[in-house]
Length: 81
Image: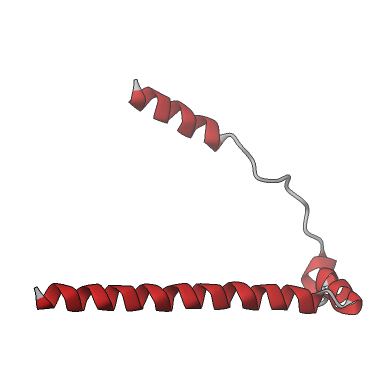
């Protein structure tokens, strides 16, 4: 039963499309500006975005450092026993 359910879900997912196909024109290849970034920069919102990304990376760094310290402490306890 599980196998048939998995096969059915896989077959159904193959027919799903993420987005419609858009035809690419010659102007798309020569476009060197990013409108979203220009608008965010002109409104001052790009600095908010960069700040949030910095906070997320800092949080991840703190988490990894704390996890490393805990693992190191556990390894020392294991060697002592």
